Length: 387
Ligand SMILES: *Cc1c(COP(=O)(O)O)cnc(C)c1O
Image (cartoon, rainbow, N blue to C red):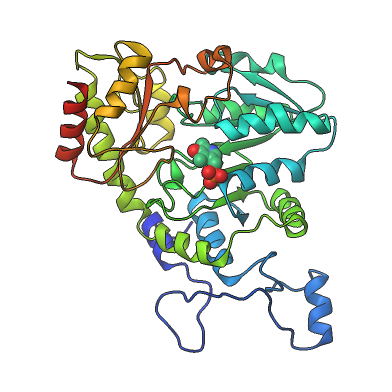
């Protein structure tokens, strides 16, 4: 990357129309015309790079991909309708029946559903490892293991996985290392620098940052992305040009937004930590976080997600949610508005109790996605709800 993060996020512009507008126009077209028959043949034969049809590519999705490729330090990428479309398509493009996935057990609820409910239909099995088993995962690698998968920070436990260690293991055993970088964004953490082969995002979260569009993106090694592109071009999970236009615009302010998100989150975490009604607080940049050192090594700031446990378990947690006046009760995260969720009864309710406890989600855990309201107002609302 020649330019600094903020500059790339603002200055990469792929297309202008004949009107020479300063910001990128929206290209709402399903298809593109060819100069002549030879132009069409060459385009379909991939002898020439150009837009053919918006399911394959579009100037707006290409601009978003170009930005994310630059920001993550990747070679190539593809944009999807949602984060789950990115995750599903990435796996489906790269795996064959009989292949095996090794994954951290603390994954997004729908990713867990892919691994346990849908992939087994095609004889693709997943073995989970726990956060505290990371050093011993080599024992879990099988001859047919193809992908090593993890989120860091994890959802909703905000645990941190050592990306350098995962990448060493992946390289040694020729596995494809895929990291869901949704909670960190490329502004806080660039998994490719630590050796990841592919990085996946739900752009719905901090990348949009205002809770208004859905999107997903996979970036990484160009040979792998080419497989993912061919799969997606034929199966149709593409991002809409409108969403790409919004998300490309959102990236222009990612650094300033995430800076403030992290500043607010650290203040909320520091407020909660000594509070007498709080059992424990987990935030990557609090010294008490079990993987604080790794977080400091691989992340630039601590992110905007805090997990905490209120004394009194499930009932106390529900009471806290019901007492909030300002903060929203919602399942989204990474919005300008502070959002509070109770994972055990919502996003992770499909997991069995045993699976939930193994991923550190006991009934009292509350997850806060700290927003961009004034910090005094956020803390005031949390303080009165705890009372
Ligand atoms: C939200 C989320 C997803 C799924 O993204 P969608 O855009 O909702 O499909 C995947 N991974 C993580 C970590 C998420 O938070």
